[in-house]
Structure formats: structure tokens, C-alpha cells
Amino acid sequence: MQNLIILYNPYYQKDVIQQHLKLLIKNEKVAFGKVKSKLKNQEHGFQKQLELIYKDVDEKNYLQLFLTDYSSIYVAKVTKVSNEDYSNLAPTYYREKNLEVETWFIIKDLRELVHNNFQETRDNILANLTAKNFGNHTYAVYGNNYVYPLLVDMKHEIDYFEYDDENFRYYPDMFKSERFLRIKQNLIEYSFGSKYIHYFHPDSLTNIISAQMELQEHKEDLTYDFSSVVIKYSKTIEQEIYSFSKILFKYILEKNPSFENISYSVQGCEYTLSDIFYNKPNFGTYKYLLKNTEICDFIIKHFEKYISYFIQKKFIYYINSVKELRNKIVHEKAATIDEANKLRNKVLGVSEESILVELIKMKLNLIKLNIK
Figure 1: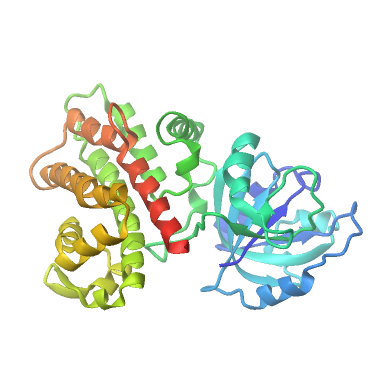
Figure 2: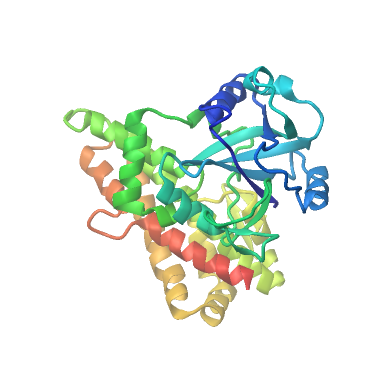
């Protein structure tokens, strides 16, 4: 996947992102224009390289475009790049201010990564980027001679638009209420840390915040059914377990392709291990596969002890504890606030380690192994 970054200038328009978001919501696509700088006459030394990349961009081979003013940073899913005039898909300020656009990027989705926090933008997003044509050094906020759009790689590769549901989009959730943003910031500061938050599955943070809001709103109501809160928390863990499992089995299959014929069944349907990347299994499937003698032997032989212990002990424990509570609520009775809080504590890491953070940490360890 190709990644670019553009440093946009609020001088041209104060509400740049908001203007584009309005059209994206209305039309399901919007054109973002790279405005020719009036301050620099420097030519882009890597234009031919960019043009080759642009030719290959389409719906399936999309490009990730980071947009930042250093205070905030966003990432856009770009499905077309053109030098032709696409101002009809763009906010009117381009035409009203006679801005000279070099290149148009057609955006189909947009995510806010950091809102109005320079330090977090610099230390957690930009620090993960390397300038591809500048010695592959970490992106430098100060003292650089970059010409934009700038080709960047990620130290830890993140596909910010990896959907389980092809109809899912991020942009409708941008610029949530102050309450939503406040809860999000509290979760970052006191539960997950900014180091790990951007590795969560796309739906995880939204589900957690929604559950938090519902829990706070009804915590004094002793008759309230907290089943939906339990389901939101359990769905979050379920997504992160699946994300971790895909990385794990990808590594295993790359090292031993013969394992792809190991079979399992879900609700009467037969699958092989290679199907797990496209068909999300149930909790029982993970336990079944990890008990397989060949897979067990592989894990013991190829992973360090702490990774092996996590997979064979802690990972299974997480699955069992969440499955037990979720099934009890879904199939038996309304959930109490105590039951909701029990699962909340496991997710957020209240008086115990956070299941999510542990899964993310171990997933990053596996990603490093895949890179080597």
C-alpha cells in the first residue's frame, strides 16, 4: 500500500477538513486539491515516481493520504488521483479564491486520528512515518526541505481502512459531540495510552465509547437492562481477538504452508485454516485450532516462551471469560450493571490488565516477526 502526506495550510481556508467532510457526507466522495504553494518555487524532484503511483490507484488499490496542519491529523482513503479539473467535486472555496490546484485526490472515506493535539500528532502518528525519498528517516517536523505530496512509509504498517463490512465508512463518525471526544481522550490518557490506540480495530473505540456513554447514563437505574453494553464490550474483544488471530495464523502458514489444509467447522460449514482470513470464526474455533497437535508443536518450537505462553494460556483464558459472560447475557437474562462493569474492567484494564492492550502488544510482536 502506498502512503502520502500533505501539509495543508489553514491560511487558504480555516475549516479545510470540515468543508470536505460536508461534501463527503452529501455525495459519498469529495475531491481534495493539492494547492500550488506561492512561497516555494521548488520543483517536485519525485514527480515521475508519484505519477506512476497515481496511475495504479483505484477502488481496490487505494492510497492512504495523511492530511495534517500539525495540530490535527487525518487519513483519507483515495481511490483516484488526477491532474484534470475536479473542482466540481470539491468545496467552493477552491474556485472562489482562485486557488491553483496541482493534483486532485478523490476521497471515499476519511478518519480523524488526532484532534487539536500537536504533541500526540508528532509523537504517535508522524513518528511512525518515514520519508521514503529522504533516506527513509523518521518524518521531521522541523528543519526539513520536503516538497509535498511526500511519499512516506510506516514503521508499523497500518491499513486504516481495513473493513470487515465493505459498506462501512468512518467519516459519518467524525467530529462527534464534546462528550464523545472527552470520553475518547480519557480512554487514551487513563486506559489504553496513545501508543496503542491507533492499532485498535476500526469499530473498537466507537463501541467502547458508546458503551461508556450508555453505562454512565443509566448507572443509577437499578431496573435498566445493560445487555447492549455487554454486547458492545464483547464485540470489541471479539474483533481484537480475530485481528490477533489473523496475524498469528498468517505467520504460521507462511512458515508452514501445509497447515492450510487443517480443517474446522462452524455451524455445520466446513473450512480449512486458510479460510480464517475471510470467514470470521466463533470463539470455539480458536480453541479448537490452538489445541491441534501440529499447531501446538509449531507454537512451542517457533515462538519465544512469553509469546507461546500468551497464545496457549492467556489468549484462551480471555476467550473463555468473555464467552462465558456474553453467552449468559445473550441466552439467559437481562444484564445487571455489575455484569456490565465486570466486562468493562477487562476491556479498560480496571484493577487488572486490559485484554485489549495485551492483545495489541502481542499483535505488534507478531507483526515484527512477519516483517523479519
